[in-house]
Image 1 (cartoon, rainbow, N blue to C red):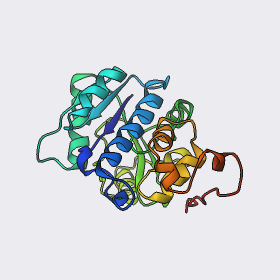
Image 2: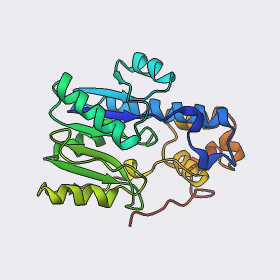
Image 3: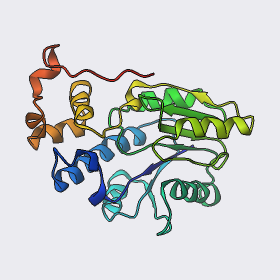
Image 4: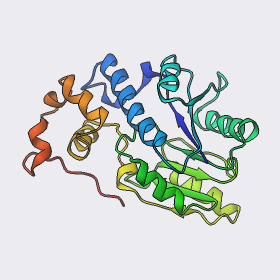
Length: 232
């Protein structure tokens, strides 16, 4: 089982945070989150390896730092096509029996949670986002069993694609996978729930946490704690 982590071009990352973060801060935030995700995946006992899928120059440094493979998709590929190409590469060249696709903006995930999800996997496992609209982890055995539909509203299409093949998709809601960072409220939730992450450390050291009205004292008690969105 191989993990696939797509990383977008950093200059266009997290545009929904443009009102509160500068372009350079958004770039640094994306790198911090990617490091948290790659750290968790690298420490998983159930994964054979990790493949970064990206055309951004920073992907080389990340791959070297974490000892991962790096795959460059074709220039005209969208996200779903890039992931399909990566899955075919892993199957054809590295003997992958299955793949676990994980976005680079879910910094709360842990190795134990990854292993727990993989332990119950059979053919298709879908981990939804907190609104059950998107897919924050997709596991497929074999790697190209179903078409990928990563467009922000991929949860239902992935279930339908698996059901069409009688693959009996397994749905695993996961609080740590559910939080993908896109908005200022997501940043506040991250600071409250993951104070020990590399992403939280960056937010504090950069002064972003203070700008958001969240400091280290907020993570220890209920006063000032941001409200999280509940899974539907």
